[in-house]
Image 1 (cartoon, rainbow, N blue to C red):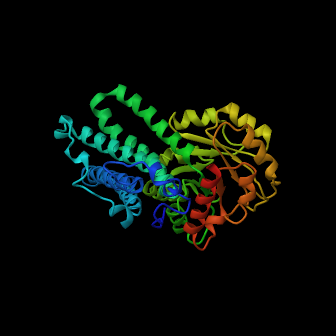
Image 2 (cartoon, helix red, strand yellow):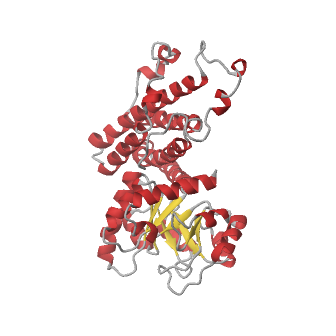
Image 3 (cartoon, helix red, strand yellow):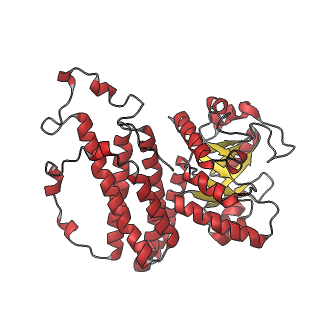
Length: 393
């Protein structure tokens, strides 16, 4: 996500409860340090800690695994974190006065294996991102939301990088645990996702997708109805690489075989596609399976089938679904009351007309032309991210 440096303690009245309190109600921290300065020190320390851990992992992906996609994704995460390390936060640093610099633990002096090095640094970065998420809520809501998304991306990377190493040491028990870890991380990432791009043919197809990912799109679905299978396979691999680079989930529309071939995160099925249980048998237990729905009956069936998420729409008539009547906001309101899985409203939506749909109860949105045909997909994506985050809050 392209981020701007936030104004210190934001435009959301952050710290107003501290600044407006009488002096005798302010809580002194560590020998007279103000609340604001103390929190800036917490943010500063954890921004450093997260980046240091990521860099340690990145070096192994680069030099040990020769994994270009993982290296690029870790670099992108580091750079995203660095954008929040503003001068205002850095100026609060007081290393000589930091009690933690004198604290140590015997386990920190040694590392018993490569797996331990990676595990320690994954944990360090994940913990730091959680701290940034919580204290970031007092500094910038955008920062808090961004760190939350990055933490879930890191859980997925943790499984992808560590599981083969641990599995080779511990055998089949670790392999079974690995599957559970991958499934959990992938579904947690789905749960946190608010924005979803469904692709459509466009002059600058891959550029539009990458720009949307830079703007914060959390899921990309590759939808192609006319190309031959060789072309689909090639394009799917390229989109998957982009999704890995930016930490997004990658879904294939309809084609379970293509999803298996490129090891996508899952598939999205229409009403007349494979039953969900058959798709799961082909894909395996860790993958995501979504289903399109247009009315309450289809929602109920998708729930009974065990869909991981559903599409709800089309809200408006759209050329993506020619001849399909709009389901309108009435179905959105129904989904808000009855859907127990994540659901994404879809159909003719864009950054300018999304507000009424959010007011009807939607908190997640899937778009097609609004991003694929945009002059600046990243800017449109940022607007969608911002609007859906506010609706969620």
